Amino acid sequence: MSVKSITILGATGSIGQSTIDVIKRHPDRFKVHALSGYSRMPELAKAAVDTNANCVVVPSDDAACAFRQAWSSSLPMPEIRVGEQALVATAAENDGEIVMAAIVGIAGLPSVFAAVNAGKRVLLANKESLVAAGSLLMSAVVQHGANLLPIDSEHNAIFQCMPPCSKTLNAIGKAGVKRLVLTASGGPFRRYPLEKLASVTPQQACAHPNWDMGRKISVDSATMLNKGLEVIEAHWLFSMGADEIDVLIHPQSIVHSMVQYTDGSVLAQLGNPDMRTPIAHALGYPERIVAGVDFLDLAAHGKLEFEAVQHERYPCLGLAYAALKDGQGACIALNAANEIAVEAFLQGAIGYLDISRVVEQTLQWQQRTDNSPVNSLADVLALNEAARTFAANCRQTTGSQITGTT
Ligand code: NAD
Ligand code: MG
Image 1 (cartoon, rainbow, N blue to C red):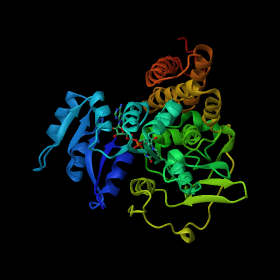
Image 2: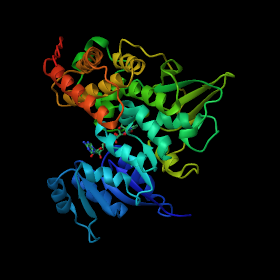
Image 3: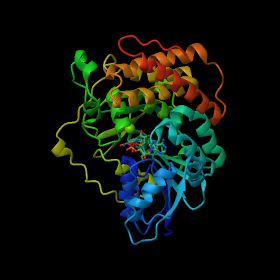
């Protein structure tokens, strides 16, 4: 068995760390070529020591300095590369056969494109890149023969339940597939009094009942904007229309998603809520490899519950469906506005309910102002920037009334 070399983009984050955990269990299969981190240089240095990485990518000279200072190992220090260009080049270079795309947000898009354009096996955690540039990215996958494997637990589950007509996602058939059902935990506010949602804190929003994740996706899970991003992600990955993708609340996060077939069969993938399972699935695919995850004990769980989504509690989900039906420009605006709003919420600058207000206002702005087609990565990034600017203005004037002006 040949040892595969891996580049982990976003190595200091939740998914990055889980990836390192799985890789370290298989020294006979995997070695690390490169790691990237945007902050937390001591953690990046530790990860580089743990994995014996050849190189690291950091955002600035200051970060490079902090990385050097944090290096206390007697091992030779890895090569340090600096800046966005270095990140993109590292994603594309031959030395990393597999790229784990685990940067959070639209910041991950250029490196995802670079890895796809280089025809790699790309393990896609960065859902925002599919939301903002789904059609371009899926075309690039086909054009360059990349092998895109979903890491998001729902999409990884669906991938596992799809018909076995192909070894690669790009060529997966959907023969007999009727609908996709994405499960959602409902987040920390599933039973919270609606009238009290206005005053919930970032700490409460980040306390996810089942998953231990980065702060941005934790807030997205509370608002269910995350599930909205995942509906759009599923649309691009599996060529299913908005009306063929359902969302179902499942508070235990054991059933990770399902595929309904025309004959009435429903296939589901189950497991403990631990991202090392989808990561190991995609790393080893088509083989199954050990992930370090406990086996699911259904008797101990006793019961699995399911319920319909209460849309008044999660307005962001409806906004995401509307954006998907509207088109790529709306999806870019949805994602950009959400990134700005979540950051503002995490900083205490706006309230929890303002997140959906900023997103809604930005979608209305996009409908009023933008009719230009999105044909290139540059078009995506330009619209993304304009939407961020609008959303940032919205959030400054936020409160009960938001009046964006650009
Ligand atoms: P995180 O916040 O824990 O980690 C994010 C990583 O991205 C870090 O390494 C950080 O240094 C890096 N980063 C942040 N801003 C950057 C920038 N501007 N440029 C370059 N790098 C930057 O996030 P996470 O929870 O690991 O999520 C990562 C991605 O995976 C997200 O797209 C998220 O939606 C997706 N995802 C996460 C989970 C999960 O369980 N955590 C599950 C499904 C999907
Ligand atoms: Mg998910």
